Length: 123
Image (cartoon, rainbow, N blue to C red; front, side, top):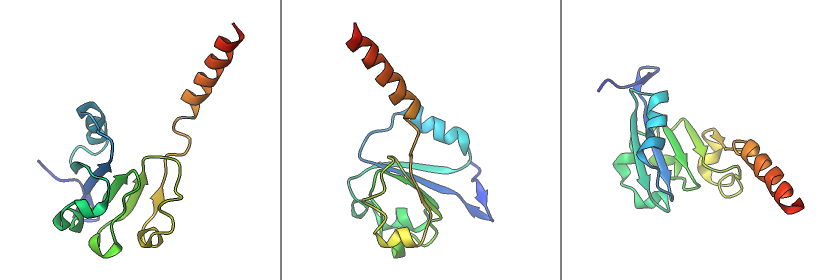
């Protein structure tokens, strides 16, 4: 399989979650970067994963588990699964790479649920 390239390097993406992603969800990620090397690992903390997995990592999608900066020399971006960043902004890695969150991704669904609950309650 050909590898995606960013400035002459292979793009390695790790989806690190405490929840399970099904194949449909992982396929949606692959559709955006079809030539990237995508790894999914379910782990509660970064220390649970082997060191060689971290050394070639470019993008990390995680709930909140962040490795120590020296373990991820190629890391360029961290995407958090949730909107909150309180657990990670004070970690060493947060001073070295951009960390983005999922703020606003559920706003439409929450608004629809809230409206439905109000309508149901008024009945």
